[in-house]
Length: 253
Ligand SMILES: [Mg+2]
Image (cartoon, rainbow, N blue to C red; front, side, top):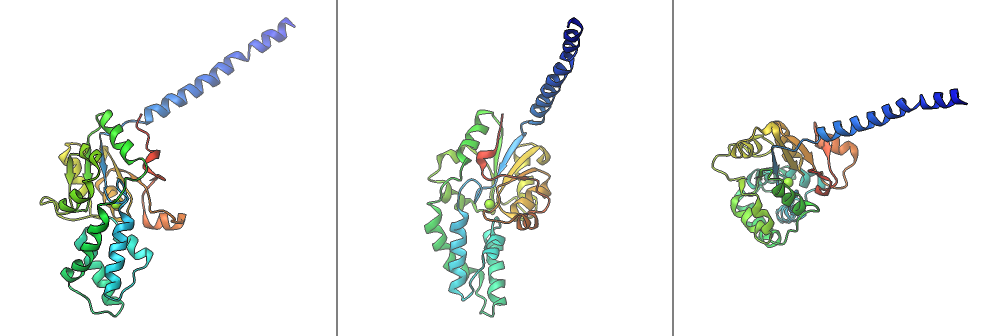
C-alpha cells in the first residue's frame, strides 16, 4: 500500500505542473492585454446613435429628387463627409434617370431634415462608460470624425460627457486633406496626441471609417452595422479582425 501511496504521490508534480501551466496561460493573457497608447473615436454611429438619423435625412432628400435609396446605398454613405456623400447621391440620382441637382440644392433639402433630427441622438450602448474609463486610466483620447465642427457642436450639446474628448479632427478641419476612407483623419488625430497611429486603438462603425483607421495603421475595433450576414461583414470590412456587438464589450483593465 505504501508503494501505491508513493505512486499516487508521484502524480502530484504533474498536477502542480498542470496548475502552473494554467497560471502561465493566465499571465500571458494578462500581458497580452496591453493598454493602448491612445483611443481614437469615430462619433456618428460609434459614440452617438446618429446613423439612422443621417440615413433618414439622405433617404428623404434623395426621394425628393425622385431617387429612392437602398439600405446598401445608405450604408455606403456612412462615415463619409457631407460633401462626399452629396456627390455620391447626385451620381445615384443621375444613374436612376433623374435630373441631378447641384450639391447646394441637394443639401438645401437635406440639411434642415438632418439638423432637426441630430440634436436628439442618444449615446450608443457602452459609449459613456468607455469614455469615462479612458479618463480614469488617463488614456489619451481624440475624436476622428467626418462631421464638421458645427455639426459636432450641434450633436454634442446634449452630451457633456463628450467634453472629455478635447482633441478633435473634424471633417472640415483646415489641416485635413482627404476624408475617410483615406487614412488622414486618424493619422492627424494620433499626431495631435503625439502618439504613433500604430499604438492607438481606433473605434469605428462604418466601412469607410474602418478602412481609414486600418490604412492609418491603428488597431481597429469595429462595431459593425447591425443585421449584416457574416459574408456581408467580410466583404464590407476587409482586413478587420476585431468586431464588437457594442462598446460594452471593450475591456480596459
Ligand atoms: Mg461612424
